[in-house]
Amino acid sequence: MNVTGLYRNRFPSSVLTKKQRVWNTLCKFFFSRFIETSDTVLDLGAGYCEFINNIQAQKKIAFDSNPDIHSFAAKDVEVINQDISQINDSFPPKSIDKVFISNFLEHLSSREDIEKLFHNLHIILADSGNLIILQPNIRYVKHAYWDFFDHKIPLTEKSLTELCLLCGFEIALCIKKFLPYTFKSAPTTHPVLVWLYIRLMPVSNFLFGKQTLLIAKKAPHVN
Image (cartoon, rainbow, N blue to C red; front, side, top):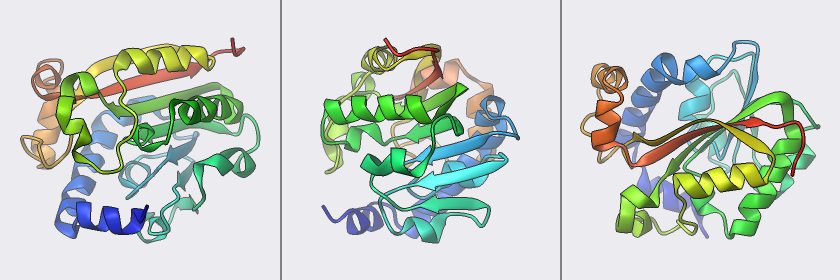
């Protein structure tokens, strides 16, 4: 699949500018509470680097198979342009404090690939490490889930929970309705109103949320 061409068509520059503003606000007023400034943070399937560019951490790493990632990562972000199958070759065991995964799992080819990835993430995460997963929830998105040509695997908060438990993680937080499905369909992308959306939770996300936020903590042993 021509991933580079697909995403250039899907996200024109006007949309990317709005997404960067949204993520600056989300990181500052929400996701920063889960990231220590001393952490090593891996953004897996980093895409346009909206999260990793805007979060504060000691070491920030963007991992993506799309070569365009070099154009979007900030100067303080280390870029690894490789296929996900090579992740264990890129990081030694217990070297990452937090792994952020946003709108990525649905693009993998099979459930077996997702399970293998989570086992590998368990290896590279520090003993106190966390997965932070933002994932479209097909329970709420419904048929619109398939509007994107590269979506393959449907997931809900329950299947994500089962996956994490299977691969040696404990669930620390699960907000089954968190953000709207896409920023194009969000009520607004203005920073002030994104901040207001955060402040008005759980009412705002109950009304508009279609993506699940799940935070999973590495358990001492894999079952």
